Image 1: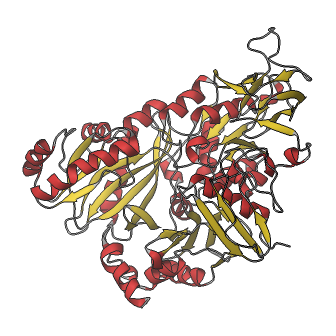
Image 2: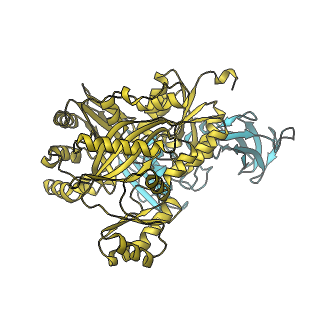
Length: 168
Length: 460
């Protein structure tokens, strides 16, 4: 269908996110791409080939070509791990490289367990970078379906940490 | 340090592009393991594929990945690395990185944090040079106000140049020929310096108008032994960014050359400098005088020309010193042979005012042959991301003489095929074909005042 590698589209989406542009419309080699930071934006006219809309919500499903939502810095739709989870699930990813801790301190109960109900504000884990701890929150309401990393392991940026199954 | 995992040296490479690949390959050739810290934009690049392991530090923008010392050191510790190579640019001259490495027991492949601080601040470096008796242009201490600047400039004599104490790369630098020009430029230079380096401290130097940029490659063992690997002429610059470098500097007499080397070795010897460093000078060919400019406390982009004429792999030397496997340094062991020239291939369009030209490389055929070396992490299908410096390759040639090196460079540039993005190769070919370049009749202003106008005319 498309001769443009998905990596290029990924790079374009990243560029667009970084830019001060509100909309971007690109047509090349069997691909027509429309990106907008306005979630209600309409594609300007009938698409010629594959269309990538840029949904404003991280859980909206992408169109024909995998592309990141233009407003979310992490791009759940892009990775294989995210693609393999059901539509009603959200993947919580590492905000940076660091050490993954499931509990506030050694020996304390874990922030969450599989099956536990969480809301957007629930603390799921800590990521430690050179003794500085960052709290990672669920960002969605639902229950913990999967914990992808063992306590104390190094995680890389964007690595899946949890899968949250939403009630909706 | 007795854990089995640390039995072998494992090098963390905290950089990207050609220098990351260069450090990885040097380490592998020495039997060391490697880990590369990458941004999300570089996770599929050649560096990531070549390293023993690649870890993603953070998202594509450098401020969230390559410029975060705590992420870099955390990754180095968590992956069991014993040493860290910072490359050039990014965090290479940030004393905090060297300090964090030291406190985690990781050998920093570079100078001590104290040395980085002393030479990194230009005012402190000038004080060091003064104590070591190295010649420099007349200049001031920190200057706070326009009025003060004008008063000091009157004493030094015009033209003068403003410089940021905290940094380099041309930012905060402004040339003034009259007090009105200085008044106009001063506040803006303070603002630029503050934005670029977080410190707006300026000082003023006499501006040497007809000058060449010369520098000496120095290497210290950290306990007082310091040798040099010859000098380089890096006069071909655009907006203080080097575009072509050669070694040796053919403009120098042997007597001046030796004095220049001595000045650099004395300066860095005076602080017991460790690992690779460069001392930069301005050289006035009319009076045969050189003036100390600054010290770069890192391996430099243009180090290959010194390697080619000395037959020394400086990056391996850096790694050997940091991991405690280096032999003693002896100037008598370092011999020079022939002439080397490097050109920087950058993804910028000279026809469109050097607009960066990121994108996907569809064809990548660098030249090859005797006396030709290409340092690059690019390949066909690779993406040149828009987030970083636009240099994509260095083409280095080596031959018996400057003449022969120019001929070899000319042929090599003709055979360098890049498609998919715009590069400065047409401009480099124009430089190399210019009679002034062959006659070595150039200054630091030549590219901007002579060559670029001629190039633009030739493009119609």
